[in-house]
Image (cartoon, rainbow, N blue to C red; front, side, top):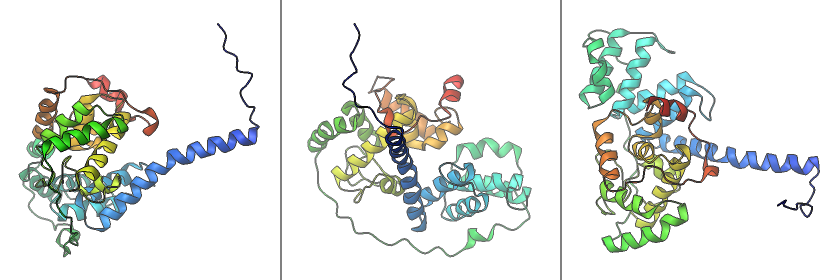
Length: 306
């Protein structure tokens, strides 16, 4: 049976060009907003945002490549005690990317990252010394102003209320409520006022950079936190084409870590995190909204690695 299409309107080339331009603008808006949010969080001193922004500048992802600024952001994040930034800075000094190469400084930074528990840094210890000699980058010793205190009033909430909220909001973000409940149980134990040692906050344990990225004003407000976490999950579902294990690994360790390691990163915390949630939520593939974001360019390599 043939479908009649004679009733469809005819568009002039000018209209078609306009529609294409509008579509391109919408697709471009999200990366721009993400970079702006990361910039704002980095200015406030958020180490996680600094590392994420530095990585994007390093790779030229949705922003012009800038090794010098990337190095500066890694250094500022390292000064704030971020182990991943220390490792990256060590690798930068080992190859001399936009800095003078210095094996002693590189080894010392990698050792510090390992001491802070960074698994990748630990793997590199057998290839580096202890790092004697050479001066640390000056930015590691800059005075760090404490971030401004933002008053966020905790809101009392019971588990049953949270479950009802999840049942209401998860379908609006095209996310299975069962997955969200399993994730919240692992992340915060349904405690809307939970705070992790890495300053992840609220029900879905959003770090400040992620909260800002998805428009969360008060991370301790259950609805605000839930909506931000759901928006991030919906984004990750599209980015990893619904592969639940990759989405969970990225939620815990960041999408860049999943891409870099071509699958679940070899971090004990992330491996246990994925196992804990998938022991409850058994589905391996989840429907996703493809229009949210283009798939990860590393997805094909990730699948081959699996």
